[in-house]
Structures are given as C-alpha cells and as structure tokens.
Length: 178
Image 1 (spheres, rainbow, N blue to C red):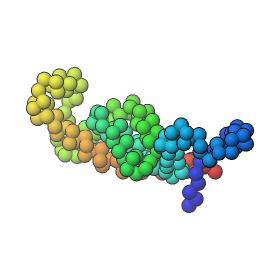
Image 2: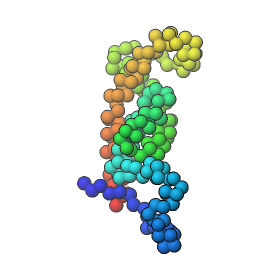
Image 3: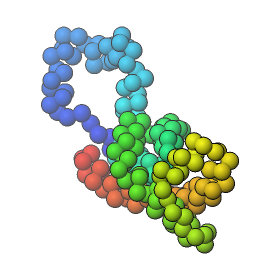
Image 4: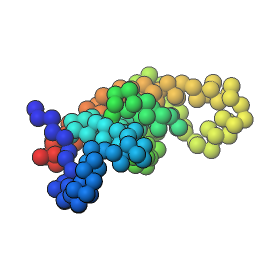
C-alpha cells in the first residue's frame, strides 16, 4: 500500500518560482516563521495522506451524528486532536452534516427504544424545551432514558458508519493523490 501525500500542483509551484528565486529563504519557510503561521500551517497540513483523510471523513461523519445537541463540535475537536487528524476537514464536515443530524436523532431514539424493548416515546420539541426550562427533575425523569436509548443506538452504529465512510472514500482519495 502506497502512502502518497497530496502534492501542490505544478501550477502552484510555477506561481511561486519568481519569489523563490528572488528570496531563496522563502521556500524554506522564513515567511511562515516571520508571520507566526507555523501552528496554522501545521493544522492545515496535518493528516494529509489519502488514507488519513478517509479516516478523518469516516470518524467525522460518525462523530457528527452524536445524538446530543452541542457536543458534536467538542467531540470532533477532541478526537481529531488526540488522533492528530486534520481539524479543518473534520469541523467543516461536522457543520455540513447538520441537516442529516436532526432526523438521525429521532432515528437513534426509536432504534434505541427498540433495542431496549421500551415503548416509543412521542417526541414533541416544544414539550421537551418547555419541560427542560421549567423543571430539570421532571425533565430528567421523563426523558433521561430516551438519552440512554439514543446513545446506545449511536454507539452501535458508530463503527458501521465510520467504516463504511472510510472504505467508500479511500479509493477515490487514493486516485486523486496519484
């Protein structure tokens, strides 16, 4: 298995040629050091092999479907930082999946209820938000197990979604790299 990196295009190198001739240290990163862009370029270029990008996409899709509001961005950030994946790719993917996230929450709730053999609970967002704002105790008593059901369904689907996305995108990314 070749581990190719995505290389800058020939046209990009040609566009930089006059600068590298006039300023020989330009190509060695002196401008990056002067302007303090080292950490930024490190994040942008981290994990840029086709297999790592496919891995980032696989984990990004699965993590972005985490069924609890407000946690997907933090979850994607922490996992990508721990595994040294490309942060811009995983965060952009996370934001692009918002339209898919909303119906998947309902799917996870129903699938989790089926896993536990619990009756399907009617889901009314107005009632949920009213109860959340008025009484935390009553909210957790009524909807606490719904969260457990949704989390269980998500954790079961996580390796399936991540693996399917990884294996679906890897061949195309490898072709793009060559």
